[in-house]
Image 1 (tube, helix red, strand yellow):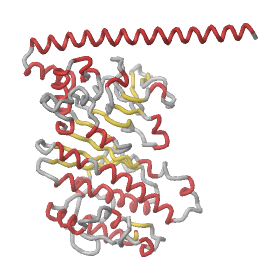
Image 2: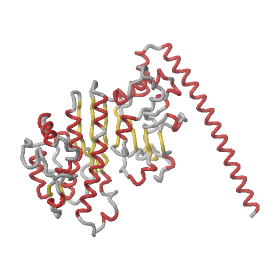
Image 3: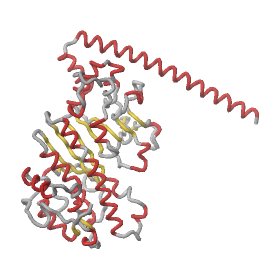
Image 4: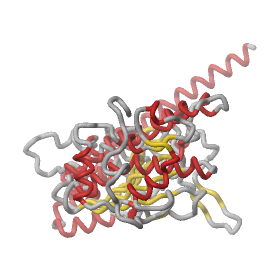
Length: 416
């Protein structure tokens, strides 16, 4: 026993010594990296005019792929129960979260995430290497907290110019979960370096970004349903209450986009909404739930479409069970600006009117809910409010007409 105890003590001592050496090595590595980078960027500023510097920035920073930002659920289902362990990419509160140049992600170390993968690389039978980016972004992607944008490494002048080129020329992909849209707009990694009011070198990224992709993560509709609601003894009222709460969550987080359009009023802004679902196989609830999902994003789509000139909106839908490729749903949002303004005017002063048009499961008596419609009315609602025959049509076929389902819905005070 004494020998075992002695060996354990020696092991603990060795581990502590290794940690001390690694910490010292880390400090020296950072110090040397910063010195070398600052020397290079200073020389670049002294010798190259802005036109040539912009070419350097574009070579280093502009990517044909969308830049992945926020909680990293871009290629897998969102799971709120494990969000403590989720990887956040490109939305640092500080550049110093991971200050080693090789690491360009903020937050959780992906190598420690419980995904059953030692690496994102898989060797195929023919010898090719396939990379799985479900749990970590591509290693060659420059993320918003990359060191090439960090003034501690490249200096304030370089960082300010690179920041402008980076956000003006790239497309940024954000999942609408965990306040990611809000943080993208209001969390500025460079703010602590450019906090002087008279410093004109720095422009907030919300005023620069021109291309945005919003991934509306609704695939977890069934997978995150409470256990009690999944049971046979659960009532339709309980299941529908969960559905409304689920949709309310998405409508709230999507409203943060209004702040972005306010920031970038002087620039063109292109937004693509990607509705991501994993709908139930049963046809009837499948259609009803999807109609409600469309209703949940309708206000956001039209508001951004008509809030000002220079806006380009695209809506796509991806559900693996429906097809391998995204479906373009932009044609479903066919109201003119005048029609949309009329719909808004009818609901003026009511903050939560989206649910006035939700379809409840047939067994539920809508009169007891205080708002919305029964799924028995789905076909006339689709025809009058959306101008389509089926929930899975991709374009408006008929003119939107005034009646029971447009522009006003069904509600009583207090209904949400």
